[in-house]
Amino acid sequence: MVGRDAYVAVTRGIRVSVRTYYLADQSSEEEGRHVWAYRVEIENGGRETVQLLKRSWLITDAMARTQRVHGDGVVGEQPILEPGESFEYTSGTPLPTPSGFMRGAYHMVATGTGENFDVEIPAFSLDSPDGRVTLN
Image (tube, rainbow, N blue to C red; front, side, top):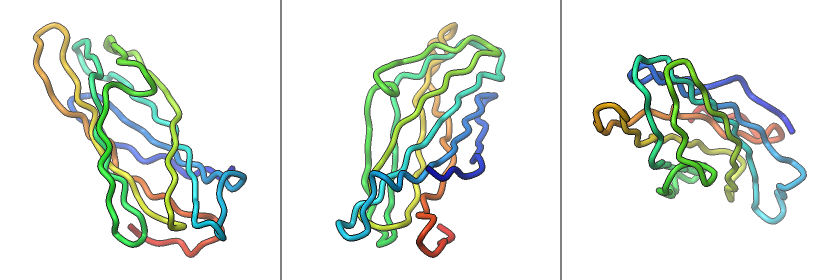
């Protein structure tokens, strides 16, 4: 498992950082399957309590084919973050190509006011350590 430096975005005081890991033991160049894990940390650096309700992802492979993924929460949870709290989870994605990228948004609500807003998930690169590194 090879890790990369973190990709970071901040929206309304909510800091999202992502680290990616190529899973060579689950990948097969011959079968056209490349698998990555990504570890996300969501930190509430703002002044209001927020809840993550939904997520939206755009996953793009090296052939520019994009898959859209939407769903409730993350890893089966809809975490509530008080100011100063953080939540971490790990998930993964397969691609048919040795590189690609992901980006997206968390759909949040400020629990005190009921205001809905989106938090940016930074675009992050998925590159096989054996393949040519591509700037996505």
